[in-house]
Image (cartoon, rainbow, N blue to C red):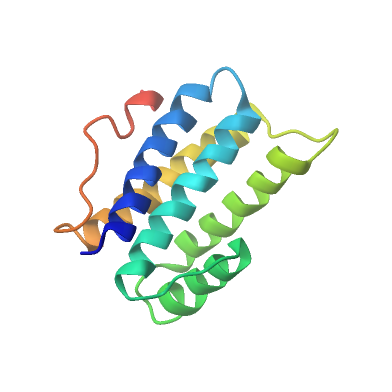
Length: 137
């Protein structure tokens, strides 16, 4: 495996742990980090197939086109990725709108499901950190 997917996976895991840490303090930051954890994880998975994207919308489209439509991922996981994207947009650009604590928790759980799914599909390439999920217990 080239260094690029490995770096993306490491970023996904670190960003997920940041989302967990920020959950109680700052739901906006937590939701944004949850999205980025999923974004990096999906980008790592797609990079293994030689697919690299420069836009967030292109990664979201690839989730639905390359993972959900052929049945690799369930529809619910593709929908979770799209909800993460929406939460990130609110968190980063919402001005007077903010992500609720409940929505941030849902975002962290969705990111965890995506990281687990990516790891399970490529166990030889992407191992989960032992702390995954520890921030939500």
